[in-house]
Picture 1: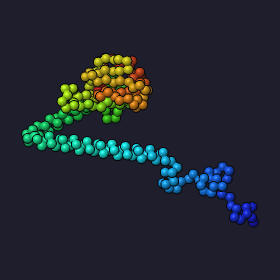
Picture 2: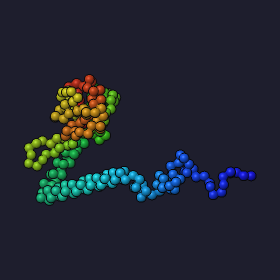
Picture 3: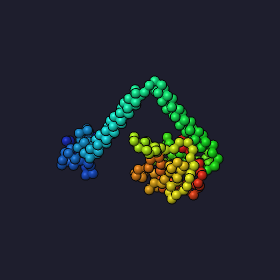
Picture 4: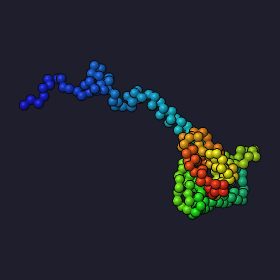
Length: 229
């Protein structure tokens, strides 16, 4: 019983047909399938070059951060080495007390925000989210961006600018901007989504999307509580 009418030596290769990716006239030169890194690199040189640039940028940033950390550690050790034992003990106690105050303020703000019965804003610094809440119910959740915390430059009389912790009140409402006690503000991005706005956020400020700002602004009033935790 004959199963095929094809002649010996002329078996059909599905890659040699009219719709195949390989041109029979070119042998295997038209085959776009790659079997190794060298073939992939030749086929996509731009993609490989971009990956290499990204890798170099990441390694450079890591090296810079390691260098700065070592520089800060050396500076701290030098300053502590110039202190007496009593001064070091007093400094450590002050630093620990300040850390404890910050942790206590953050935890109190977190609990107060959950128990607050009136309408308020809760800003979670660790997750980058802002919540419009009332009596434990979340009415709106918004993504947020935070400005850098600016320290005091040596020899300068300027004050440090930091993101608030604990409770603040709304001082006044401006167009697409909520001004808080202490000078910090919640501002609207130039785009509907905060992360799509690539312009820098002012130090100590918070940014939300333009759509979110327009949605919550009619519900806000001067004196409303804002909890940072």
